[in-house]
Length: 73
Image 1 (cartoon, one colour):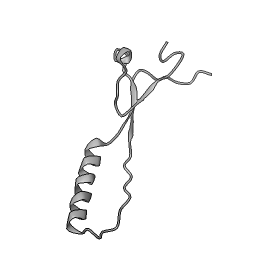
Image 2: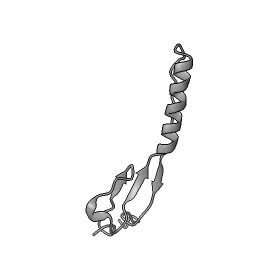
Image 3: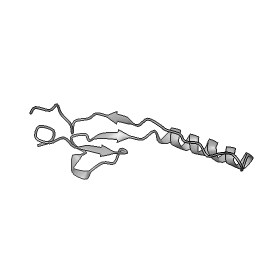
Image 4: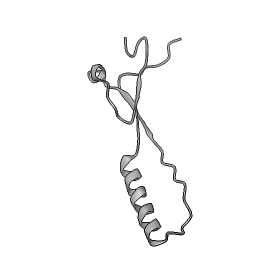
């Protein structure tokens, strides 16, 4: 049984059909920030083709729902 015997975590908000009823814990990507940063970098590259590449890190978030529980071992 989930989450008593096993915990399940999804990634990027994807849902597994049978788990919708219990609420799947997931790692959520900051999609809006990713799009905004990508567009800004694209415009910067268009305006300055010689610009050096940049590295951007965005923090995902853990959305805790009912498919995970505390370790009982």
